[in-house]
Length: 272
View 1 (cartoon, rainbow, N blue to C red):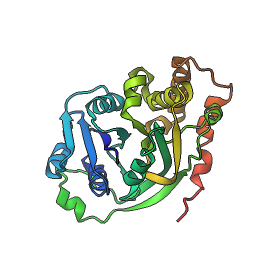
View 2: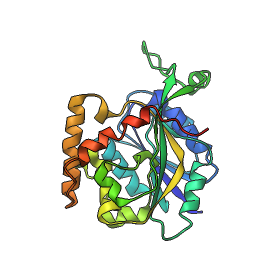
View 3: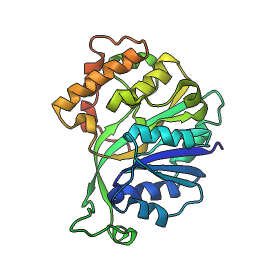
């Protein structure tokens, strides 16, 4: 099976990082985990150092945001396939990366993606009154999650982009050779950097992508681009720049359909 590299950007992520680390350590295939930390001031670094893994690499230095951290991690990756797992996200089960690796047994496949669950943790542990979180006191808390949204991606068709579709980025796995050929995240695109990258790979350059019809990642709620109407307008503007950056022209309704496609996710539920 191809070696998979997973990139995680962290900054003061102690309250949620343990789930990420356990999720990766429990996978049934060998994983290279690259953590790019933006000089955290909480116990994030302590967590990472006290939760060792043979193929883990840690860089802690100032950066220019989450996509800059992702770019640094991609440049350091040695695996054939690269995925991104945010510090507060985790894989749906211990076999996710094994299923992903099997997809890439086919040399014609350049990328894959799956479904995503947005979840809300019940009783999140927080640092307070100067008390540093420890691995021990988080382990004493039983974590339970409520499903908030179910993002069912569906099979790939390039025309779907014109109707506001995109794959959920945390479930998006790409061969390292694709990054080397077509480039990394564009930091000028802000919150639309992942959208632009998928437009570039899937719509502009038409790399060969396949869909895994299963929930691959569970993401804690709280996306930056959807916090307010003003943020949604700014996100819409950046989405337009993402199309223009690739010499592509959306339909008049494309970028308004993009947030509207999320509405059914609130009442859909994943198969048990």
